[in-house]
Amino acid sequence: QVQLVESGGGFVQAGDSLRLSCAASGLTFWTYVMGWFRQAPGKEREFLAAVGWNDGSTLYADPVKGRFTISRDNAKNALYLEIDSLTPEDTAVYYCAADVGVVKTRSAAEYEYWGPGTQVTVSS
Image 1 (spheres, one colour):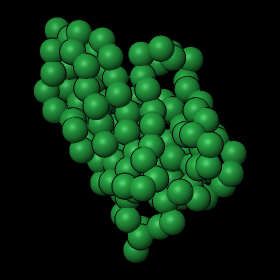
Image 2 (tube, helix red, strand yellow):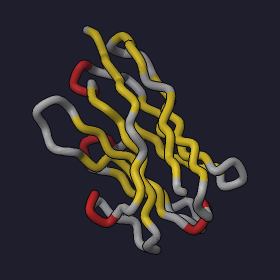
Image 3 (cartoon, one colour):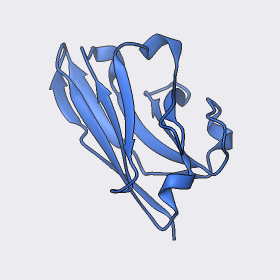
């Protein structure tokens, strides 16, 4: 079955950088649009970034442009999210997700598969 497993979260200081990873199995990874979302306590799940399946093209939420970088390695069935200049407002559970569609989308409802998430906590 399809499995997505995030890693790389933890406790960090404000101003630090972090690289999250997502290991995928049970799917033809290179044919899926992949995305990152996050959910902070008491808030709705928020789209962060998506990367296309064939050309590596990217889509970012406006608030994270320039600070978040999404990338993928199809040979390793892996997805990454690099976050620079972390702030306490970045504290959330971060999720990777897979969408069988061909168009990158911000809508969580379009993603068929989700990982369990990895907690990122940023202290001031």
